[in-house]
Length: 286
Ligand code: BJW
Ligand code: ZN
Image (cartoon, rainbow, N blue to C red; front, side, top):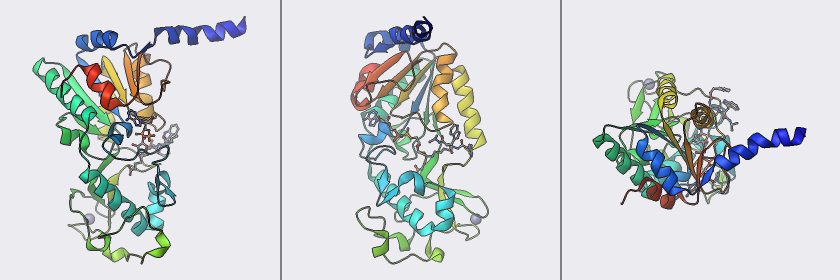
């Protein structure tokens, strides 16, 4: 009896969830006036950018998550810069794929119809803007930006390599020990005060920019449809955004390679590569 009582909300959620229901989703989409797309690494996977969790989450022998910390940068800034030089090279040469393009195209449609469409991305690769999306919040920073460790000036920098010492470095197939060490003084420097700069990325254990967090909170609290695309939904605070929308009784549609949704409260789930499912769901021709 107790077991059945526990099972019943789960069963009712399951029966509410619509799997690959393009028609049902389109009905909801067409009525929505304030749409938020929350994106993660999976949306850029088809552009050749490795995801964080799973096979792609390593550089040399290091887990990406171990290099993406302030501690790692303080201990070995040259190694962390080498990793980011590699990441910048991959991102700068990658092209937006059909998912990025579909979101940008749908934003334009919304704009013409006086509806609001925003992207909140955990990605740092800049591909949403390059695809033409205008309302983009970059939650975790951007690979093409640096911040000074001393005066905190934030700068855009698309130079590749960002400094001479990083030329021809970052090859993931090599081992750290086989390479000459890079002197700290040769690493990227602040244009203003000449101190060491670091990638403008929110590393683990660091706070998100309060302004960015506030803008996201506002969208999450007011949207009437949330799309969750290519994220494992395990990193906070982004992981709680879509569940908060669902808790308000608003529809959430997830697009992920996984056949199972990240959260039982999501109404729609589209398994498979989002480069195929997303343009179809949004009804845009590219
Ligand atoms: C496809 C596909 C295809 C593949 N089509 N789908 C509350 C509870 C518990 C822990 C915490 C908490 N609050 C904070 C924490 C700690 C931490 C955290 O969340 N840890 C968890 C791991 C448990 N969070 C933080 O530290 C955050 N800071 C913070 O909250 O500050 C306050 C605080 C301070 C101190 C202590 C506690 C709190 C900051 C998080 C910043 C995250 N930064 C990173 C690294 C950036 C480095 C870089 O890019 O160089 O951002 S982590 C990494 O994960 C990266 C990503 O943006 C982020 C999310 O990953 P994402 O995008 O979901 O990628 P994957 O790889 O995980 O998933 C890909 C998905 O795509 C998969 O599902 C595939 O199936 C799918 N997919 N191909 C469709 N073609
Ligand atoms: Zn400075």
